[in-house]
Length: 353
Image (tube, rainbow, N blue to C red; front, side):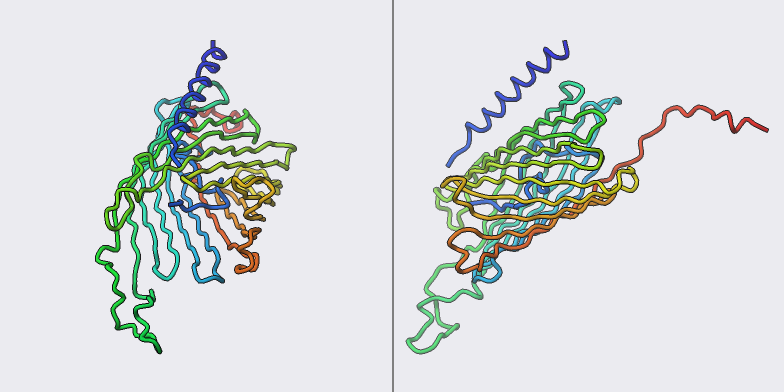
């Protein structure tokens, strides 16, 4: 009976996932090379999907610092679980995510705050499906203090007091944003082997982001499809494989990463593990037309995780960047409360005189 229900649930999950994908339409969002450590950017369906009770995470990326138009992105997130039954087989997930990005002399940037909610249902002993929703508000803005225009040159020198003949009466715009996602989680009992397979559709409402109200200036819907896998190969070694396909209007990127995880200490209260990995990013031009190579290292100590990576640019733009893409950091803490003991039998040794 369980197997039959599980097969039916898989069919429903795949149908819903394809339905979300079919809604995607052809401005690019922020992104991280360590995408597995930024689950809120992958799908609202990953809200609450982790081993623990509460998760705090932060991501920072700096790109192309040695060219005039540098990029900086920051993300901070929180999510937690609310169990809907005493067996903890199904639960609600609640979370919040703050993001900020800024680029160029105009300090063009977007500040966003989103609230996430999800529901996870157990299909079978090792299989869970999650549906998630994100409601967000964002402000897009720029500054003009460091901008220079041809009209401000008098033929010999630059005059910052001269008029630039531009209308910058509106330098910010606020918009609402709606996103949805689905995730399928597998956790092998009594093993570290697990995977997440799913997708997310962001900017479902295609919000208008124009400073001056042009109807055709919208934020393209972004569609993600991902796989996050961990295979326990030996008592102290795991193999990690992660993949991402991301499209947003005319923009497209694919990322494939792999890593080896060495468990230096497997005692629950003294967990210590080290990941060494490499990722490769390319676009629709083909796998051989790489955008970046991303070596990365990750430290896992007790309930803490620190990930460090560096993008090595492989495109023609490396003439300007010298092959340097930029560093990226991910920090995470998971609160794992000790399980409650409902019954504690009296130990006979304490009865001895």
